[in-house]
Length: 253
Ligand code: 13P
Image (cartoon, protein in one colour):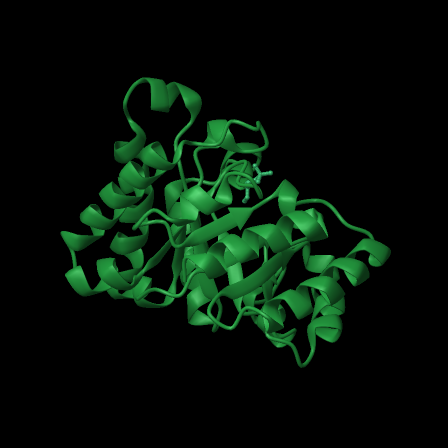
């Protein structure tokens, strides 16, 4: 049985005041959700605050990206060692906004995955197709290539301590959630692909759905057999909405 994960991705949002309110609220939510991993990935500048505010609670947290280097002359980057020092558990890698706006290739994302894992963070590998790729029936091909780059660099066993997030780009921030059937079908194909390398790894890895996942859509999405929770953008900035999504995961844990 895979333990569900409900993870917020705040993207470039937050103030000291909102971070304080949200982390206080979600620390309580996490304490009341023993059978669900509740986490927030925050802008790096707030991670120190999150550490203090979440102290003593079950809330886990992480970064939205990570550099491939641990230190040195890399102006503006955030090292996995630094992120880990602030008590983080997770590091998102390969979000489509990073792939798109920062030209991160599958190989760069794989290197970030490795850097995160080598330094004690659990990588959350984001994969997913564009609308044009979806229309062309290339969803599985795109997702498999994004996964294969990581397997090539790190080996299949790296997914024993990692999370995958399937986020169709056309569903992110658009209100166009993939239907539970469409999402389940892709999740199953991702797991089937992993199975060709290792059945054990495929069965154990948690695959989250992301893309306009909200209080209304989460219950049916999370009831699908291969959907192990969600990576939540907009709704993770609203206490009631994120709590409702956590409740949906609890009901399916
Ligand atoms: P939204 O939930 O706002 O669509 O964002 C999804 C996402 O990109 C999470 O990483």
